[in-house]
Image 1 (cartoon, rainbow, N blue to C red):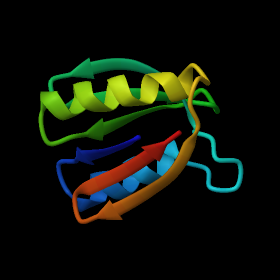
Image 2 (image 1 turned 180 degrees about the horizontal axis):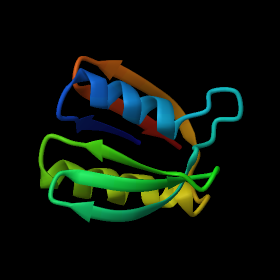
Image 3 (image 1 turned 60 degrees about the vertical axis):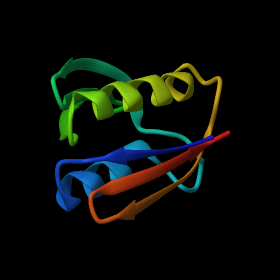
Image 4 (image 1 turned 135 degrees about the vertical axis):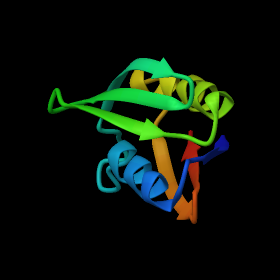
Amino acid sequence: MKVQIACQDKHEAIKLASLIFIKEGKETYITSILNTYDNELVISLKDHSAHSILLKDAGQADVFADFIQSVIEKNDQLLETRVNNDIVEITKG
């Protein structure tokens, strides 16, 4: 399954892609979504740090949260991420 997430800008897209995917182990650094504020996601990582990611709008935040939940719960595995300007394409399976 693939999803395209629109971020606020290219910098946010690169940040999101780098935080969510570890290519070698096909896993994610994200352990949970702490909160969403309109278009802002606050995520917790394996090292217990928290990071903010700005998406294009609140709808994109909801789409990402729904998509990544099965990965966080280990029901799905991330296969690939690609960044194209402000868009992050994420594939899970």
